[in-house]
Length: 448
Image 1 (cartoon, one colour):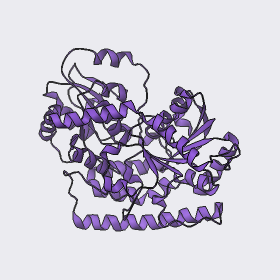
Image 2: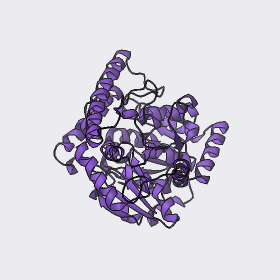
Image 3: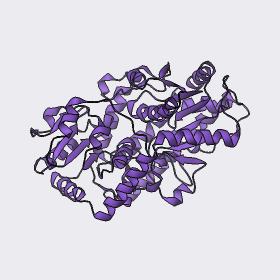
C-alpha cells in the first residue's frame, strides 16, 4: 500500500504530517510526500519519497527570515511581524486581509497538479494539511477520498456560527476592545464570503456537478483528523464536529544531539525550555524579557533564539544552552516548564511530555490554544506585548510549583498521549474509514 502526504513547504507543517506517515512505514508500506524543495532534507530524514508540489510562495525549512523569501512574501512577512507588535486584533486583521492569496494560492493550477500527482503515485490513502486549500480542491474535485488533518488548534475548522480568523476563545490576559472585535468579525465574514466564492468557482471548473459550499473554511475531507488532545477540547464544540478522530499529538523521534544530551543529563536546577517557534522568534523584545525574567531564578535554561541574534538577549549565564535551533521534543522530555508562543506543535508536544506551559500568544489559533491550556489549568498565558520581566518571573515561579491536582491531570494526559501516539491513531482512523465505506483511492486516483 502507498500513503500520499500533501504538505506545504514549511517544517512546522511537514514534521507532524511526516510523523503520521511513520505508522505506514512501520507496517512496511510506502510513503510519498508531496511538498516543496525547502523541506526536502526533512522528507529524506524520515526515509520517504518526495514529489515536488508547491502550495504557496513562501517556504520555511526551520527558521524563517523575511530576507530569504521571494519578493512579495518578504514584505508580507515584515508586515505580519510588525502587526504582532500592535496587538492581537491588529495581527488578526492583517492576517485576514492576506488570507485569500495566502491559503488559496493559484488554486486551479495547484488543484490540477495534485490530480496529476495522484494519477502518478496511485495512493491507497491520502492525508493532506487542512490549510492546503488548493490541494484539497484538487482531491475534492476529482472525488479522491482523503483525510484532512487540522494541525493547528481545532478552531482552524469552523463549526456552528464561528468565522475563520476570529478566535472562539481568548485567554484571560487578553481582553480586546469590543468595538475592535466587532470590526474584526465583520472583516473575517467578508473574507469568508470572498474566499468561499473563489473556492466554489474553482470547484465548479473541476467538477461542474459539485454542490457549492456555504463556507469553504468549514469544508473538510472524508476523514477529519485533529492534531490535538480531545481532553483539552470543549465537549460542546466536539459535538458540532463532523466525523473525526482526535490524534492527541504527532510527536516525532529526533536525531541524537550530543551537545544537548550532555547538557540535559547534568545534575542541577530544573530545566526551562524557551522558544517562540520558527516564525515568531523574530520578536527579540519578547525573548529578551523572558531571558531577563529567568536570569535571577535557580533554573537551567534551554533557549532557541531562532532569528533573534544572541546579543539581543542580554547576558547569557554559562549554565544556559542557547542555540538558533534546539531539538524541541528531546528538551521537553527533561523540562520542568516551557515558555512558548503557543503554536500547536509546542502545545501538543509539551502535553505529551507532561510539561506545563507559560504561553505568550501572538497570532492565529494561538489565542484559542492558550485559552484551552488556561481553562484546563495546565499553564498560564500572558500578553507578550505588555508582560514585564517581573510578571513573567512570577508566572514562571508559579508554574514550576504546579498545584498537585493540576500536576496529576497533566501526568494522566501525558500517559494517554504517549500510550496511543497520533500516528497510530491516524492509521487506525483511515483503516476504519476503509472498512466503513468499503472504498479508498484506487491506483488510478478513483474509488474502489
